[in-house]
Length: 362
Image 1: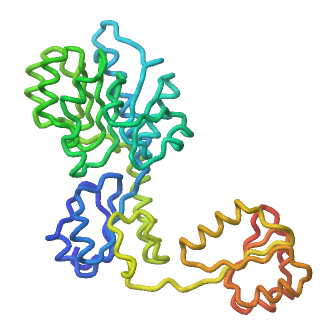
Image 2: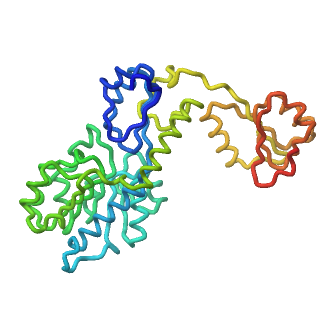
Image 3: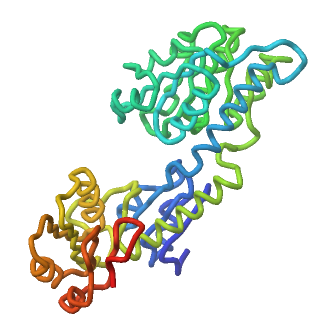
């Protein structure tokens, strides 16, 4: 890493020892959602931007969730009668990209979904088609609970015996989060006390042998564990995350984009050691602006650090000629961009017609 300007990782640990050797490093991107293998404090101290690529493996993880659910519901395909998922209830702890992908599949299976996320409004959860719940304990009143939270001091070993014993008959905990979120010692106690309880996990717990001894023939029916972290292990997810990481690095160096930065710096300290050149974009229309569309354009330009100058309902071509004089870029609809306009546009590098036709551009 000594000569690297940027770094993309998967499960590799980027700690202080690594960063101390990375004299040129400006950015490290975890190709995936989790980021507990990056020392964010050390990155911040050295003014190194740390990012993840949220959402790129969402569908892969969601499909694994349902693969484990089906395997459990059908008793690991041992020839005995199981049950169907339709009309059953699934509660989601967290409602980020992966949880929403799980919710989408649950809808296709005819399940009823519930969700709790302290960072997402109940209105947003309702708009997605799930039923919001008011607290974490309320999630555990439903048959299935799927975990979609990061590992933090607050979530570490937070899924405990007290919560799990609240679950109804056939209660099933599903974890594609970090295994440390679940209190593994207390999971073993729940297995001993609840012969109907199931645990499906995208990583084998450290006390898997003890769980196997308790469950006997029910192991890999009531307890289903992958051999390693498998949620994102698909061709598509690996490609998506890798390409996203590369694009984020390019966006950072070329335009100073820090959209997915995990360790925001104080406002007075720039995230990169360069200044993005100021650009002036002219948004022109002979008619009135569509307010909603213009609002989104303004947000996009502001995020990139570009200035936006708007001219609407102009009465003469002279108004357009005056406005274009200082523009680096120009967005139009029906406005005519001919030689006369271009002769006045000394700084203009690009003109974009917002639409398919372009016969109004010379």
